[in-house]
Image (cartoon, rainbow, N blue to C red):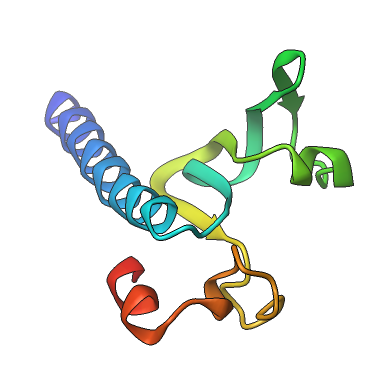
Length: 114
């Protein structure tokens, strides 16, 4: 019974990861900046992003600095393994005047991302 539950959770986690990766790839292909790609649900255990000097690690659930936000996508592993998310720049309608924002894209582009 316990093995079945563990296998179920592992398969579900892989399906969620693949689903969220689809949102990530389509957003990037349409020129939309992805702020964070998270496996699991927050709080964040750790994350990593690429900076000019290579990969930088982010430990814990602290807020990102402006430099970290500007450096590109943060790839994170979060505490609750039952889910995942893609945080897309401008997904709540803010920053619609910035060309790499979700809100600045045409309706068909926003539709395929979602």
